[in-house]
Length: 207
Image (cartoon, rainbow, N blue to C red; front, side, top):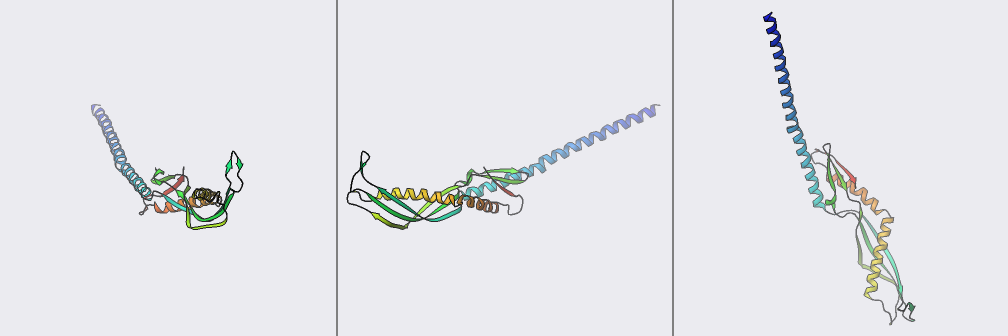
């Protein structure tokens, strides 16, 4: 009877020891997995994010759309006194300029770079008009009505240029330059920021 009882105790102890070893093994594997495998993945993600951020910083401004145009502006005015036009002071002119409207992302460092399941998601700022340039060599006076009492001044031409830029911007937006720039930015950045070794994929989104 004692021998049977001892045998039962030995078996119970053996089961407890085996269970304990299995438990310890499980804890070891869990710690190894979290500290090494996951740790490596987190380190890889962190490195990938840093690489992408550096590339965005180097690029800074990205222009991916442009619109070339010739714009005409007509200006006319007369000198006035208390809202009354003074006779013989009317002047007018019609001028044209060639220009370029650029669209893209002014500051790529404002983009958010987010890790996502081993990949990289980039949330970009909205596309906007980044620059409007007038070619001064293309300046033409198409019509002019001047007089000695109210001659055309530099200020008149500067005001005309401001109006020209406004019209150029409106025309470029109407022709779809923002949509073109957006599509080009997605294609260009996806290619530019992709991993050279294929470690991660890049997904472009917009804020």
